[in-house]
Image (cartoon, rainbow over all chains, first blue to last red; front, side, top):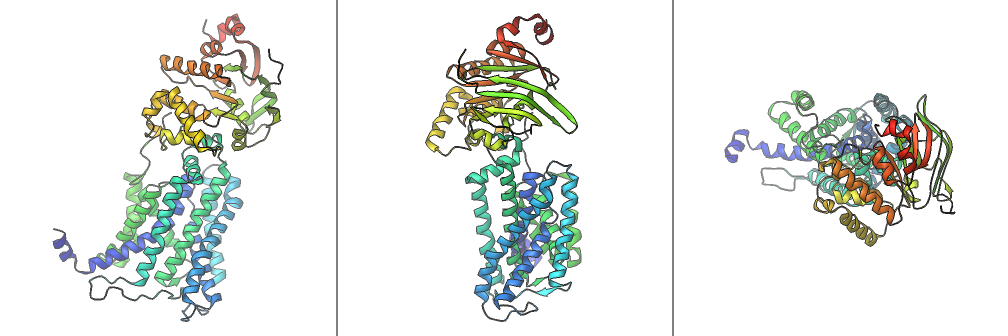
Length: 316
Length: 240
């Protein structure tokens, strides 16, 4: 049966599925940053997509400094491996530090304020980040150097699987596995889960909740930094608005999976990636955004807790 | 009475939320080995008192001394390390952690894994139902089981003083009896307890001394059996 469906959809189905999976892994990394922060302090951090954008700009800047990219972001053909290595270390550190700083300066003073106050502040931070991006790299879309070549690794097969696809998978999957193990087994990971479930009880257990919140912003930021590098190397472009659309797609992914739920963010990310690429392929590129936001609306109406949203409720 | 200095001294404590002061110059002491109860109506300030002692609610004036050391303004996560643990009102179990993980969270400040395992086993001996439920999420337990878990979790930090906030709230009478038997047994083994209760009769029966809290002020204090037979207390809190 699958064969007949595949025949009806044409051989390009496999390429769409691969592109969807790879894009989905990227959305998942960003969605994790939304979902973890929401899980801990119930804040939808609207600046998260723009943090991702600044991470991409920072990576581009690094590539230029190292000499792997020219002033317009085009690859010079030199120092590619060095640049990728430096980016993968420095961009997560940069985004983590920035995210923790924003929490300390903007959100922390509003911890006991009504929920709307930090939310509106997050929108403000989003605009500040975007303007920093404009100031930094201008308003035109830039090249992000093609440091990983799109060489086909599977000639003769129906699917074109390139070094770029491989890079996305090789970087994002271990990061997600590491995050899952970290949250499940380390003391800080357990403290994060406990704080998300009941912050007052967490304090009574001896957990420094402020430190847990800072760690959550650091981890979410670092994941956005990894996503920024991988996205840049995969899509080979960057621009000050890249965080807006990608951020909204990742946010939709987090809601689809169940906001606050870590496996949910990964599942939602992959689903949104697949929907985006299949939608673009079969329905048309102009329907990509309406399709995804229609899904957001439908989830919010019929299943606001998402696919894997919290099922066990606290007994009072 | 012992001549040792009291384990806990609360001296002229003031606290509140926003514009409203909830506690007015509240003073109380708990001696080593004692069960002390604070009884009072809903909204009298009992939970606020415990939350101030635990460092969750900020004090506005007054001093809290624990084990000879001032803990006024010490953050909640540090208070636990000094040997002061609380089973909070409404249990506050971690709903999506298993029973065993809840107990492990209670030992968050400890690093002696063998001792922790032994103490989890002790908790299971005290409340056998928790062992049967050890792999279930805390949120799926019954109210009584959650209360047992909350007390067992609070004990996991090996406290010198246990604060219990409304352990009888919403529980069936035979479960309440079981919980109070455990409190008595813990005390026999040397645990000092500060117990907040609306169920004044049960609380005064188990406690050595009691304080009556009315709208943020201590209005009576005496030995528990004296309070239990005081006509004013009987009329106001024991329904006679």
